Length: 176
Image: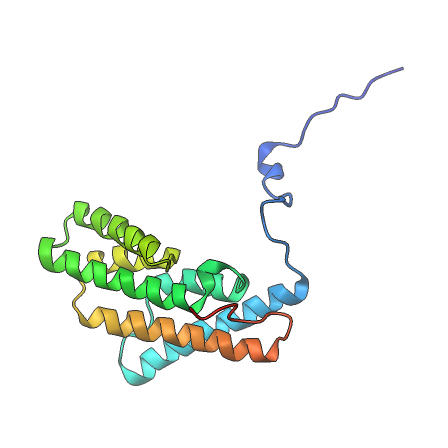
């Protein structure tokens, strides 16, 4: 009897297989995440264009992934979103004020933001991105309020508003 030559799938194909380490989403959850993230980011973008105040920043793209795709995550809760972003903003402005915008200051700002978020139990990965973007853009103290604080609060408000229409995805799990 002739044996078949079994070859495992190439590694590139294996990367697309579902993993037990990844959350599984229904088609409804995928559509909801898509729609809510579109509206949430659009609100920030249109308010920025309409008011002339910068209410959107690159880290809010990552925040949108957390609050709209995995709202049950501890990293997506309001305390973490708002607190983590504000800590990142405060750290970057302090670092820029004290040390300028040298490459080592970027690393210092991110590391310090992570440490402070861990100590205050407000870990939010985009908060590290806020610290990095702030140093890269030579942020002033205004950066903490617009876009960081205002944008984070608006994204949380959008998520809370959307959760009222979706009883299967309550948000927040806890406020503090």
